[in-house]
Every structure is written in C-alpha cells, then in structure tokens.
Image (cartoon, rainbow, N blue to C red; front, side):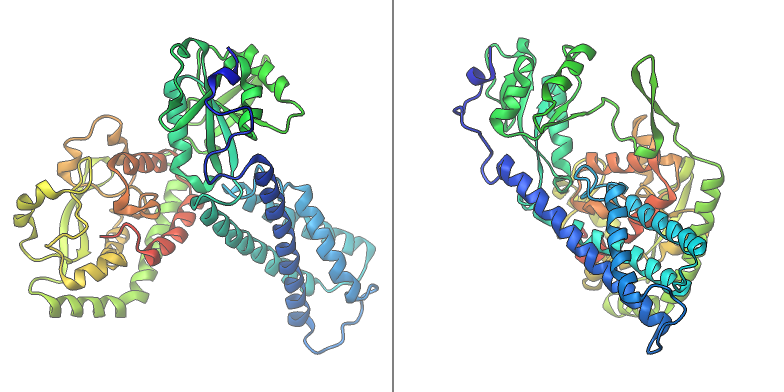
Length: 494
C-alpha cells in the first residue's frame, strides 16, 4: 500500500495551513544565514574600530609594517572565514542549543591565537593592545548579536512563522505521539511536524490522523511520503519493525534528496555533556554518564551560591527595607513569612519570603481548595483572594522571594535548583518524583524560566528532574540570565 493511497490530500505537495512550503523554508533559512553574516560583519567592524580608538585615540599609529586601513578589513575577512570553518553558519547548529555560542567563541579564540603566533614570527608590528581589545569586544559582540538574532527567530517560530524544519515522524503510534508532543513543547526549536508514517500492520483500517498529525504513509514509502508533504527532515523514533538494516537502507534512500535523517533515541531528558557515542563493532553505542551529586563541582557550586547570596543581600538592603515598609503599611501582620519546606535528602527547613497574603491565609485555604487551577499536588489560583495589594506586585516581579537569599547563605538552598516542595507534597511523592530531593532546592530553576505557575504539574516535575540529572555551572549561569527575562516578563507569576 503506497503513501498515495493513504494520504487524504492530492498528489500536489501538502502543507499545514499557515506553514511555509519546503521551498519557502529553504529561502527563510538562507535569508537568516545571510543576515547573520551581515550582522557579524557589522559587529566585527565596530569591534575593530573600538580597538583602534581605545589603543591609539587621536594618535597616529607607528611601528606597523602594514597600514591599519588594510589590517582591519583583512581581520574582518579572516574572522568570518574562521566562523565559517568552524560551522558557525551551519543550519544544524544555529538557532538552538549552546553549541552555536561555543563555536563562535572557539573560532574567535583560535583566530586570535593564530594571529598572535604569526604576528610574533613575522614581526608585523601590529599593536598587541589593539588586537587584544578588538578580539575581546568582537567575541562578546558576536555572542550578544547571536543571542539577539536567536531571540527574534524564536519569536517568529513561536508565532508559527520563521524558518522551521518540516518534520516527518516515523515510528510506532505511541512513540510518534510522544515525539510530536516533545517537539511541540518547544516550538522555538524549529521542528514542525507535518506528517507521520506508521507500521503497515497499523494501517488497517487506515487511520487518517494521529491526533492532529496526518498519517501520510507506511514504512514502505517513507522517502515518497517525505517528498509528497515537502518535509526536509525525517525523524525516526522507536519501532520494532525499524531494524538496523531498514534504518541504514532508509539513509541510503534519502541520499541526494536534501532530506535530513535524524534518530530520536528512546533515552530522553539526558543532556549532551553526559552522552558519548563510541563505535563498537560497527555499532554507535551511546554511553551515558551517571549524574553527579557530589564532588568538586558541587563544592564550587556551593561556594558560588553563598558568595553571590552575600553580595546580593548587601546590595539589595535598601530595596529590602522599602519592601518591608510597604508590606507593613499595606496590611497588618509580620513582614516576613516562614514556611516549612523540604530540602536535599528530605530534611526540612524554614524558607523565608516576604508576606504576600493575609495573616490567616492557611485557615482560608480549605475554603478555596475546590478552586485550584493547577493539577498535581500544588495549589494555585490566578486571582487568589488571600493575596494583598502589595503582595500581588511582589509576586508579579518575584520580589517576595528575595529573603530566600538568607537560605542560600545558610546552605539550605541554591541559587538554581528544583522548586522547594512542601512536606505535604513530599508525603505523596512516588519513586521518580522523589529524585528532586537529591539536590538542594533553588530560588530559581528551569520551572522559573519556562512558565512558572502556567506549567502543569507534570511539566514542572519533568523540568526539575531534568535539572537534577544534568545540572552544570554553565547551565546555572544560563538559567540565572534567563530568570531576569522571566521576571521582567512576569508571565506565569501569580
């Protein structure tokens, strides 16, 4: 049975409403890459100008065998070539993940090292101060420009436009639905599912759709189905019928078609640094390192947490005093609210927050239980009548959580980590959810930068467990940076 007899549309290429065709997607891709090249060129030109003015000012440079009017364009060209050589314009890298930023930094550092060596050997006489300032400003500028360009791309993708890959998902029904849900969870990643191919045995009677994803064929006609719907990526997920031989043959069939083949392993929620591929007897075996819950990195994390908390408390003392005064003038009761939470290893501690509710809030909770707006074990209401006027402002900007810096200073919490749970929640944890207690809870975390109270219980737990398994100091810095954006945006805060 061919894909033509299975798919509901005609033989003409089919695309979902509002989704650009394959040709339009390729045009968007090329336009975005060209825009990146222009943006990088502007950034590098400005960086060299800053380096020149910072080093020489109004003075006339001397000692160089090559005039700086030729040095600057040459450096820009070499820099762009270096970026290209390290794949900084590779469509498989740009737009998502940290690899794009790493490549930009690596290309810049390698070029700086190469020029330093050549300049020393050839005795060109170009000012080392000029080069140092230019490369420092240029590298930071390139990273900032890539970040700004990526944010604009993410906004376009989230609105249904922009350059996104058109994905044909191949696998068993359950795994196809799971992969579709995973890809849709982060639309800004740029993977838009346009169809599915399922095993032959599941095609009688023929299902026209899996959820809202059209079934366009079986495993026998995957390349034809991809061509028919204009897909530029085939994502293969788990299926008993997709043996290694059939998967290898599919790769051969897609050669020269311009369609990428990606494999989604059954192992999920494991970050890249923990995954290593090692070929053994012709098989690409995936080695997964165990999570790290102690050791030197943990000591460094604890030191950074406490040092940053001490500095933040010192700098924020005037703001804390103003907030305390506002709370006292707004409603009767104490300024601070202490609540028992559960930390690492199941130990209980008192978490400090600015009071945002009336003093008898706990007594009123029983009356509001039926109006809970979230699933799982938490209680959340968008318009909770117990919240005071000042409390609403504090919650919107997450200012009520600033006293938790004291908990961080005492070593009870981290700056970044899972949400600190209540003892009543922990009492109902199952074996998987209890893994949240393997690390210290945090003032912010993946839940904070991914929607906060707008997240479902399941999504919040998934993000917390992902952090527990894959934490790193670099990831902590990224989350802290994103926290500022989440707080300013105010989305999911109530």
